[in-house]
Image (cartoon, rainbow, N blue to C red; front, side, top):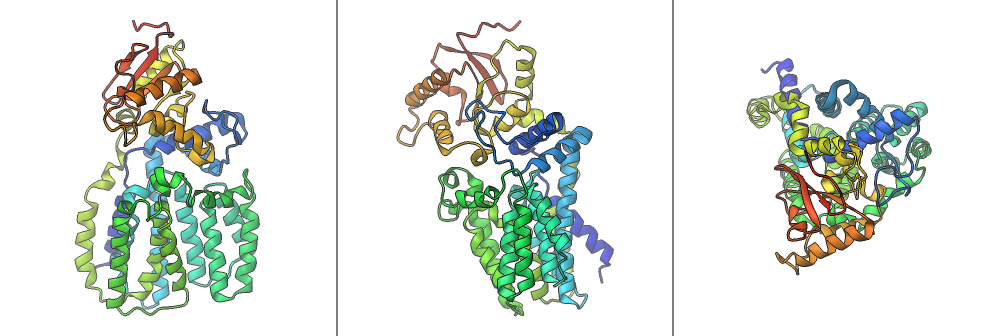
Length: 464
């Protein structure tokens, strides 16, 4: 018999490996900039202070508290501290759900917990979703709420109000919690849960955006953003993104039928969230996390299953958790234009209004530059802004490799908006250096393997 402490250690190692993502997320930087702004000014920005294309437009800032907290951690412990915090939050989330499954069983058998964890991680594609982002708060809060509902613990009004008040100012995923609570109330025909749903709705509206926060997800479903931004893409538009998810759902089904699960009325909620996950790539981990305790309850099996699962889990995890302590500054330098920004900072005569690749917008605004667009996307920018960016940053399919029209559009776009400097990818296609090739109006002032900084002939500067 494998001792419980060893099982717990391996599960912890697997959780750390699942959340391992050593590259800082592009969206982390605008979150940190938001937290810095709040710390320095003492106010929550509700209009955009960071871009030149949407300056002063309403910003539905649903992650202000997460940004403030992330900035405090970054100031004290840097990127390493944020990655460690991420690992702890995800470990706590999966730990809550695994313990919920164990308590639901009531027989102290844990033979199926490791396979359930492995399938959950596989279905959620942890390396894509378990990043340093505000949605970690949604994972943890959803796990806590699901635990209360699964164990049928009596929900105290103050606890529900506090949870949704806290959640609504950390991440817009609070709507998934209201959906879960409301569906559970309907499924169980419980007036008490229905009243708790109303209380949670009231608490969720106590945020800078009010009721708009809850309507925000509805704007994304079926919108053009879902076609071009992978995280909001539904299954019918990009089925290639859902291959692993489909495989995970298939394994759940085959495994469940083979194990003869004991179905309950609450499992209708899982079916709903399974279908809901197909409406957006970002919804996949919500279903995977909710499924974990239910399948721990359903699946029966002998303890020897651990003998097969633990080595596989260890091989899969490998040495990934050890790399959580990678030096953050080297990662920042490798994946983001740190040196280019240092150069621009040393020469204030260079323009701070930039054209740049979409994925670098968050880092540039963190470094204090006026950006064209960034990962806040639909929170700030109208769809037309992103459409214009795509039209100048990439040639159309009809144009193919003949990028002359795209170069002309880029130059005209910069003239129209008074942009005299651009930070372009040196080798990549999107917003790449090819946009200014052959155009004598632009000249490079800095280049490395990641980016090249170009300025127009109007900019009077020569590097010493």
